Length: 316
Image (cartoon, rainbow, N blue to C red; front, side):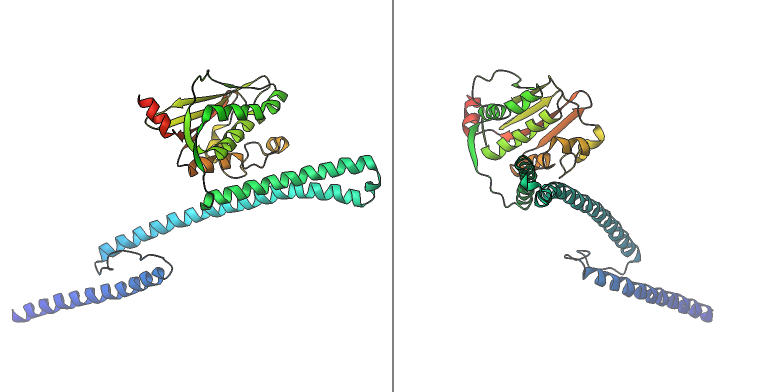
């Protein structure tokens, strides 16, 4: 009887010791993985100490693997975006560069002696350089907006008056396509907002230029300014143009993204207009929205903060 009990105790002790040793062996191996991974991390892998409990350890490793998979998938998406961006930048820059180079080389090969050709080719080369400057300027603006280097000079101004100024600036461009730029109604009183006036003018210009580019002849682009809750207004730019397919909407504000690459390039522009719009609005801490249906039209809208004087008047 004593021998049986002693044998059982030895078995239990041996089993426990063996299990402990195995767990400690696995733990040291896993701990080494933790330590190696932490060298690659800016923050520790886990806030709590690594445990010898295998169930907890397994759960932590599974969570770590899942997090790493998400990070890897995110990096893959960013890499694809980087490749697309570099390819687009290369294409957008080389087109005007090669155009200018072609005209200048033709002139150097002897065409410069012909006064008529000389003037025409220099003029075309100059347009290509202007397009190149336009693209580089827009890229510089987006870079400043993204890294937060661009200071917004906010002031109180009448958004209705600013919209009318943009209408006046784009009147000739709109008239070439027989497109009417108009308000949705008469605004007898000023609507005061607090924002960077110059940047908001650029936002309105980019949105209206796009509506003219992709609008139908004899069409209309309508702008409205509506009160929202508390201290916000929303500006809507609505057209009855060709519209945007639903599958393009999620990427519409990406740099150089074009719904119709061939058609867009014929219309000119840097391919950065909507991206600039998004960055400027977000730099103000505001939101921009887009709704569109093919062959029906598009509506871009963004919010702005009312000026304090406007808030005071609206409460009276």
